[in-house]
Structures are given as structure tokens and as C-alpha cells.
Image 1 (cartoon, one colour):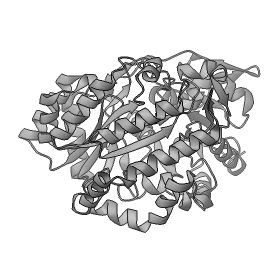
Image 2 (cartoon, one colour; image 1 turned 45 degrees about the vertical axis):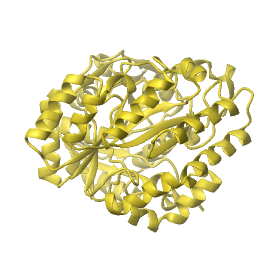
Image 3 (cartoon, helix red, strand yellow; image 1 turned 180 degrees about the horizontal axis):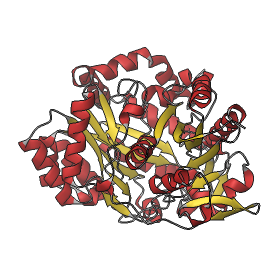
Length: 481
């Protein structure tokens, strides 16, 4: 058997479908996000040991099988780490099988929300996976590598095989985020130019994404909390400012999307960051996601002055009865008030909605449409409710409607769950009607015309892929033919 090098680790972000379909994937055409989790793992491993890491991102470079095989033959790494969502899990298994055929003896470790939720069940069903990591991966993966896979029973956060049975060692304590190095963005081939924020979600290039917190203090019924559970931690304002400055100086980033569930939860942190950005400008703009309870006119004004370009607001549904079933502090009037405040402060407003929640009806969808059309929302994202393993709804989902648990389809863009009292055909028609009605509104169209000078790169991308985007509004299919 080939001698393995445990100072070399290859990390993989799988695609989730056939590589030849990537050029027709509407999601990928609109948004290619860097695999920040893998970049964090890479930075942590290289900081704390003599390990060298290589990242293979199938999402940015879909036809990467030959590249992966070349790395395996040349580097002979002891471990292959794969980060997987539910929809990309089967592709992760395919990559694991490919790696073991190329380099027998390599140990395959899979992390991410899907395996964190399912724990022992993954190893029971998929022999090409040697270990899975539950929760945050930095410390667990480092310890596993340093032991070269030996004595796994002492490593917290790990699922491994013992006497033919899958065993979970229990959760590891959470990390102090300010102690972590900045993600190893330089390990991402073609960064930042190869990665793209969603169209019309940025004013300029180059741009990128950044995570400044982990977890969420809330417990909405539809959210997967398997990785961070109920914890919520965030980087300090000082750390975050230095992170932004690093991205600007090292990579020339001019616009940043904070990919956090609750960017404004700690008001003091945001106020401190805004003060730093105002007093010591970095010539950068940013987007963030907010929750209505945690912003007000004064804070939004400071954010605008600091460079906030767009704020996303989780609405989910405007039917108060339905919203109350699935979310804490349901208040549609507060949502409308907050949208008005965001707009008043000159910040572009994006609404995040969901269709097909348990209890959804044609009437509740109509209420959501009326709400979006009555409020100054510049852009919106309509996801299809998907009951992911790890979400509270998953445990009892079959009692609430019809669920097709096909992991490859569970990407929030395909209908896998149909609530009681509705049909798949009804949901799909309502989805298309919602999107089509939004983009036909004169106010919305004029807003996108204004993007010609507010986000010229977005218009270039839209024109280049306009047929695919228009087909999506008509046929509701992620992979366009």
C-alpha cells in the first residue's frame, strides 16, 4: 500500500450533480459563493500544525475529478476532508469513492450540516466514509489528523466505527471566534474573481462573502441547527474591522456580504464597527441580514454611513397565523415598519420568503404576495420549504404533508414537501406566479434599470445569462436545458 503523507490534507467542496449540468444551473449562474467553511478549516490546520492543505472546489470548477486525482497521486495525503450539505451528500460519497480508488488507504472525513444531523446513520449506510465530524470541525479534524486516525474514541465531535458499529463521541466545546485565523482565501483557486455574489446584490467588483458569527439565538421550526445547535457567538468589532481591512489589502475586495443569520443581534458590536468604518474608512461597502427586532432608525442610519448597501430581512410568510406556528416573535406589522426604515435610510432592501411551510394555503401565499407588493422591497428571494435533518420540523414532517426525502432534490429550489390540503402542482404554479408578478411590476423594473449605474457588473451577467433567468421564471427548474 502507498505510504501516506499526514502533513498533507485535501479538502473538497462537492458540486451535488453531474458536472456537465453546471453550465445550465440557474443557482450557480446567479451566485458562486466561496466555501468559507473549508477555508476556515484550512487556515486553522496550517496555523496549528505542519499541515499543508489543498482545496478543490467543484462548485467553482465543476469538472475537477482529474484535478483531484492529480493532487492525490502527487501529494498522497493521509486525509480527504469533504464539506457536504444534504443536496450534495451523494456527490460527496462519489468523491470519496473516487479518492479511495485513486489512493487506497486514504481516510475520508465528511463534515457539514447533513452529517451533523444524522450522526451515526451516515457511517451505517456509507462504507466509503471513514469518519464524520459533528459540529464545528477545526479542533476535531486537527486532533484526528495528528493521531493519524488512531484512538478516535477519545476525540470529541467525531463519529467513527468501533467493532463494526458507528459511535458518536459527544459534542465538543465551542470555539472562541476571535482566536481563529482569517479563512485561507488564497487556497481558493481564482479567488476572488471566480466567485460571484447574487446578481443585483452588489454595487461593484471584486466582491466576496464573510462570516462574522456562528449559530443563531432563535429556534425557528424550519432551520437546521445541527452544527452550532443553540449557541450564538460572534467576532468582535475590532476583529471584524481587521478582517475587512485584510480582504481589501490582500485581495482588493470592494464589497462584502456578511453571510450571518443575525448580523445586528449585538447592537454594541455593530455600532462599534460602524464607528470604525466611518472614522477610518476602508472604501468598502457591505450587505448584511437583519431581524426586525434588532434594528431601528438610528442603527440603520449608522450602518448606511458606514457603507451598508443592502439589508436582507427574513419575512418567510406574511400570514401571521402561519408565521406564528414557525417563528418566534411573529409580527408582520413590525416587518413592514422595518422595511420602511431600511428604505428610508437609503439601503437597498431584500425580502427573504418561503413557500410551502406546513399549514401553507393558497390564501397564505396570496397574503405574502400582497405584502411584498405593498412594501418597498427592491429584491426578494423565494425559497421552497425543505425539511432538513436537524430542523425541528423534520422529526414529525410526514404527519404534516407529503415528503419526498430525496436528498439530491433538497436544495430549497425543488418541491419535496407538499403541505396538507395542497398539491405539488398548486405550489409550483404559485411559485412561478409569485416570481413573475414581482418582476412585472413597473416599480421593480425601474429599480433594476437603476442598477445599470448602481451595479453595472450585475447587468453584464444578467444579459449574458438572460435566457436562462427568464426560463426559470416560466418553468421553475433549477437546471435549465
